[in-house]
Length: 263
Image (cartoon, rainbow, N blue to C red; front, side, top):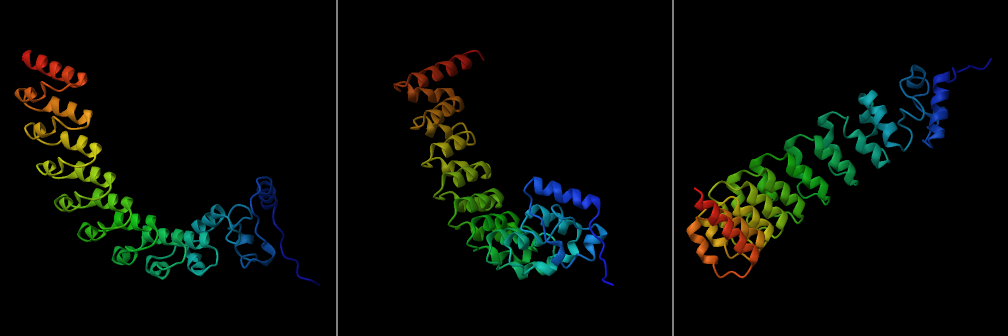
């Protein structure tokens, strides 16, 4: 007499129907290694919690429920399965995935791997991996990445680097990076960037330098920088702009002098 295996219960059948209605991939339970264990126990469900299909949501739900099984899939052929696995395997196993061919997998590794291994990812070809590395590296090792080819990586370095080291990045070729540097420079150092070629950076600088240092920006080519300087400098310095032809400049000077005259 043939052995009769228990079939799926009504809840499983309903899940299969709902998944089909939503065009969700359904795993083939007949050939699954977990057919006689997890499936019977209700610990995996076709179309919802399944490791056998190429569905990130189902795979994530499976390993969230069975994290101890993740190590069995570290060499799996599906990149998304390996990327999800990297979020569940023990930390000591993560270095085995550090050279994975897929960038998404390496990003998952970079988020969790112990800091001692991050230096191996500092030159990763994927920008997002290097950004994650810069975000996690301790300050003492971070400045090694200030010459990265990608401006977003350098911007992360500028955001996290110790204030005392930012002076070494003041001449970064990218405006975004220099803007972050200008925002974080120690008090008293901003004047070193007063001649930055970007008006966006100078707008940040003019708000952070002393009133007398702002005199050097009264004739700036950018109107916003000029107006900020007019609002900052000692009122007697405004005479330097008496011949400025811009009506906005002259109105700002008049308002400033009027306000000073009320005190």
